[in-house]
View (tube, rainbow, N blue to C red):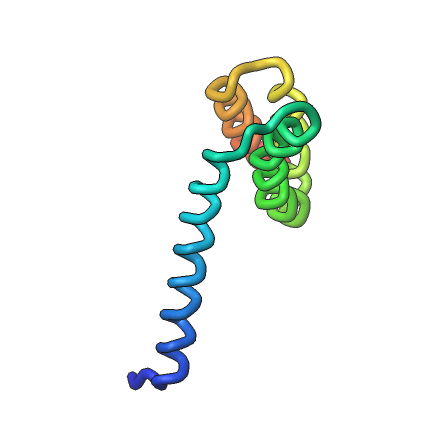
Length: 99
């Protein structure tokens, strides 16, 4: 297999840009003093990314997964993280078995 020089340079450039973007984000985030709505917006980013990653899979693979995702989301408001994960895994296994 041969590698085209242009392709290799594009991959390296993307890697460098990705690295510097992440490092810059860490450096800038440490210097920000967030309060009020800005803090609430930044606190909402991790759950939003998690939903964006999980929702397409949960809603396109079948009824068992969609129902398990709904159960897990409901439980997430009432239980700690580890308990929520356990409920999610158990609900997927049980629903796949019966559906």
